[in-house]
Length: 546
Ligand SMILES: [Zn+2]
Image (spheres, rainbow, N blue to C red):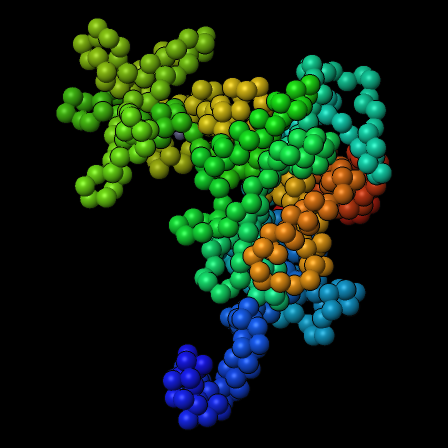
């Protein structure tokens, strides 16, 4: 605006006074005018040198400029336990060793620490008490980790190669059961966006950060999605011609991350390469717990809206809403008002305890054919003779744990066919003999691809700065390909050290301590319990909050 006004006035008003007029138009004074002149001069010298909005630039960029700072703070906070305060960051940063390490000349203030907590939001969420709580220790998250994720890993781990510090394969122990026939290879999946910010900073953004798309002028951004394994590195054919890496620019109308359909396509690309080039191994694709990964079939079993008794004659069909698709093109159909056309379909069949099919609706020939049968009758057929006497649900469906048979809906919820509904991604991969495993939420330390992104990021920053998009892509690819296989194997071993810690009953705080303390170990030593005790971290199984 300043430049346009200056040109329009035929430079009659003069460079300085025109800049002041522009500043005043924005309710700013001479200081802003000076800044405007400087910005404009640097823009004239280099068209790529657009100013970055000043608000929060420093606080965000310090956290991101210091590539290992985020990890160090996360590790420090995790070691503090389940609840932390922003002031804990202030204390951490005030440590003289840390001030030197991160090049600080003055202490970090509380408001900066608070904004950092928000930047770490994917791990730490604020509770009404004003404290930040680690999502890591949530009961449902811990349950999933202990009863689903870790047992799955334990089943396949004896078939997977393990590595020593130098990246050499370690012979597998002889006395372990091996139910699978082929060696197992884990492929860790993730997506990451990063920005080439106006030549000044590059910042990687975690997927839970909402504001992914950037306005024009804030620098180019590029999204990377890929799979990595400790056995082979990035997923590609041995000749390097086929690759599972996807690079694209987050654009309009998308949040920069994969849609559900794109995840399925990405899995297909990966499986095509794996089945063609690595047919002698059993492949397990590991995804994080993002909602787009967990999508289920439209008619998947769900007890959420079920009634206790059969649907009454004057009530609409019980079922699930789904988009109408044109049978010829397979595309969704829009109504005249521009909204997606919806239709209600029947929910799929359930499974009786003996494995037989259970229709949720009265079958052909029944006087009420096609009508939903109600939870009470469905449960009776499953052997719960008292189902009719139970309430439809406890008030607001807030059942008192550990109750599992307090109401019809809770009983239905816990039926194996309702509880373990397969995701579309699992079904998609299973059809080709490839397994899918989902990481527990908030456990980025268990996904070794996260550390690969971090390694690539540090390399990327050593390249000469450029905001040209061609350079951005070229440098990102070079940075990703520069992650050494031996490092990937160490990341893999580190993730396993955490798994070992959780398996032995350690909480997040104790696990972070152990993963650091036994850095050179592949599995945690026998002396672990004594060492924990001596470090004053208590016994495994004790919550870090008490
Ligand atoms: Zn209940």
